[in-house]
Length: 365
Ligand SMILES: Cc1ncc(COP(=O)(O)O)c(C=O)c1O
Image (cartoon, rainbow, N blue to C red; front, side, top):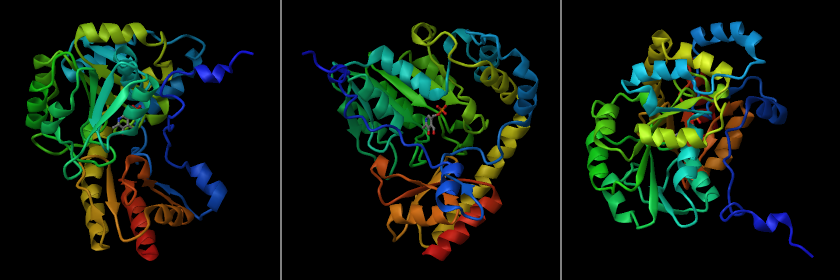
């Protein structure tokens, strides 16, 4: 009698907790049928996609029978210009999550460890575990990465350090100096993945300077996404920036047509739609501070955020409040999965969406 095929799955996969996405609008309507639904659960752009991207998409459907450009040449040229790097230093992904996964596949295995903060973005743990790697967690200080302490957690088998800046779900950021000081204490044999999914929303003046880091360190991979300020989450497109040598490796292991034609076409337009980007940033900055003030006036404790979301807690059970809000048509995100069981995370929406959320929250308190 032979064993079941399932007894031969790779180490780490059986114990895996799959990523839990935020509740969808359809799901909430089907379950609770509220009069109106406001989704503030997945850090999406409330202003929607770039109008320029929308326009080009309708014109592009006639080419859907053709494979996309496997090298994403035009998009890479646009990104290279924006980031002031060579096209050889760019790898395009099916969302920035794919870039994170490519890095994990290239460097992690069951003889390795991956380092990250305790309340780091959930995908890092999942991809490291799928590769059979050990996971080492560094405690945070005041919900911020304790970058100074990272060197003390590196072991001989550490191959990747994952850092989101700003971090999701805390929204906190670390300065350029903090990050650079940390890099100087990380062995060059360890890859540091710097995930900048919320880069465009940051207002802090001492924030990361990408090109300085790329010039100084070869063991760094920066990831960025079109899912957030560009509003193209559904198309799945993001990119990595690193040394030419590292990009060559990641390009070797990705699927040949990982970034689809519509995603490339939309991203090429969205990247130059400065009006939409500026409008989205302005809205986020003003609504983020207005929403934080409203939450605090209701007695909530908020974590100061540089992203397009705020994590907060009150004197209620977060899971119960999440369900009560959903019944009223407001979808936020409980973050127990991130070891923050008392907190809820709310995405910054349009003023009327934020008001709708605040009104319902205050009624439920
Ligand atoms: C920190 C962080 N990195 C990466 C991603 C994933 O982005 P993408 O849609 O490009 O895969 C997210 C999405 O929420 C995120 O919060």
